[in-house]
Length: 250
Image (cartoon, rainbow, N blue to C red; front, side):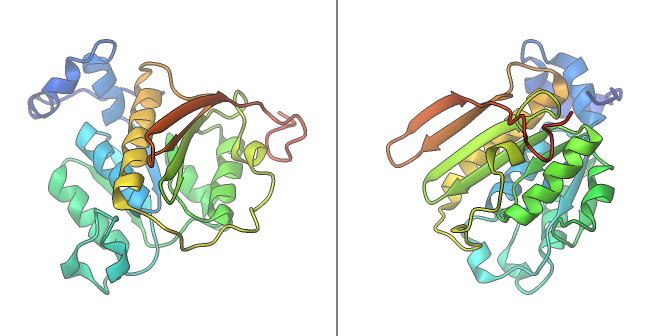
């Protein structure tokens, strides 16, 4: 759990209504202020995760996203704007987050997570929210999270379906337990509504807040799945793989 940082009078005024949440209060807000969170990719999922965490008062966000804003980003990537077309996505994200919360510290990484940079980036944070679409990125973060003992909130969606789970290394299944290898049918581009990625992004942000503040019951050892075509939500239990090459030997 992050170190608590005292609140200013301005912060008490901004976060007043969430300070009223039972079991959260000023102590929970101080933990958010003292926390650093990695949001991997600020696309449809990550834009909403980062925006909600910034609004909630997380002290530092490390955002990692390569490439420039293009027109097809604008149906769902809410930190990207028309006036930033052709310019770096991570700069648009940083600008928009600072407009919302000027107190927020941002470390903007203009790269996607990979095997070469994952260790150094994960080392900077208390918690990871994985919003990356490609399993190579997700596996790199998962390995480092297990090695460094950092919790991960795993968010994913496709079409009108989505899923969410929270991983605590050494306690819950890791990503490699759930997906031993890169699914061969998975593609970089897929059908998506912004409202679907936004829905699971809000839930992912709430999971991160719960883990950071010690609030409620996170989805540890459980996975939420939802199908927004018929508004079906289910939660199922998950089991660790004793033979997992990433976490099975701990």
